[in-house]
Image (cartoon, rainbow, N blue to C red; front, top):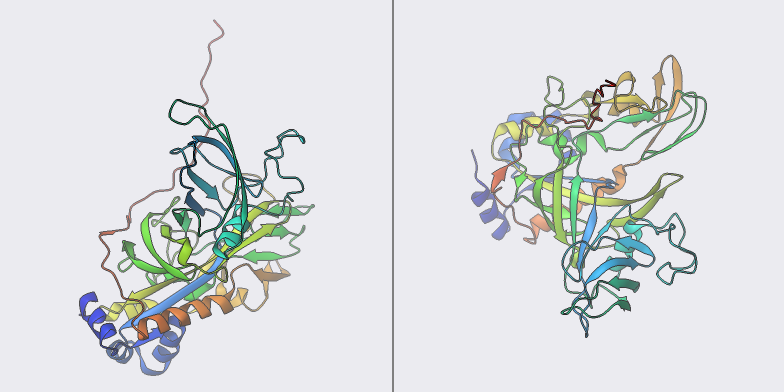
Amino acid sequence: MRTIAEINDKISRGQVVAWTVEEVKTKVAKLGVEEVFKQVDVVTTGTFEPMESSGAIINLGHTDPPIKIRQCWLDGIVAYAGFGAVDLYLGATAMADYNLNETDPNLREGVPWERGGGHVIEDLIAGKSIQLKAIGQKTDCYPRAILENTITKDNINQFYLFNPRNLYQNFIVGVNGGDRPLYTYLGPLLPRLGNAVYSNPGAISPLINDPELNLVGIGSKIFLGGGIGYVAWEGTQHFPLQKRLPNLTPIGPAATVALIGDAKQMSARWVRGCYFKNYGPSLMLGVGIALPVLQEEVIHNCSVVDQNVVAPVIDFSIPRRVRPTFGLVSYEQLQKGHVTIDGKLVRVAPLASKYRSRQIAQELKQWIETGKFTLTEPVAPLPRDRTFMPQDTNRSIVSLD
């Protein structure tokens, strides 16, 4: 048994041994779990994939005279203003408000559908200027009604990401068994099983390598968007009770986490706005987690390979919450670029970048080796007993008597 305090001491003395999770998998195949456990202190993981349940908290600072913002647009993209006077939340999937009259001064002319909150967040992180327009509720203490200004990350108070749901522990493969194209959060799905799309880097994904959430908990320090972040809470739709293989990896969407971190320290290299045709804007985000090697079981869990991690193939042509599946497929097969579904050879494309995921794990490893990043003890574990609650319409029986 080791402790996080012992590992941090080795980091401070420059004696820590950190390997990426791919290095661990390779070494386990050659040396075995027991020998690898003796050699390594920290395993670094990473992923770069779409995470649309993300957004930024922004505090603008007070104006003179003060304003209590009730409606706000950042480069024409709607920001939520239902907080304090100058607190905003900009969601990654927020869009321009095209319900406004074309002559309304609060609608920025020419804002394309393809641009959304994720793009504004990326631009702010990159140091670019953003046009702010706001309408205030006039009160005795907030008499101002209109605000127009240019903001950057340097002239606002707080600017941090607070993401309600990131880092799915596994996900799905989307296909379309219907007769028309479908435009989804996985991108376009061609009819009659014309393609398949998946959004997870597989066996190198952070939470796949901590399947029972023994290491990652509330308060865990992480790599977030090129800066330091933390696990703030369980993520929305957190479902650790998902069915699992004997190696403990889930067969579909399972655990999630809510993440938080100072966006002023982040890099636009790892926080990128994106757009899915006929679906909407989103955010590509880089996240890395360092797993402390506290006991041999950590290496055993990290030795899982793509051949032994599977995802369900879901047919999006059925417009229901529970859609039919074409069974399970391994990430090893997905990464070959084609799978056989219902007897048909289907082309496969990833949304997650395995190349960038590897870069994040490598960068986090370097942070640890150079003493830039130490580990934290979770202040509380993530729940392991959450069920998935659907939201169905309540149907009342109305008497005609």
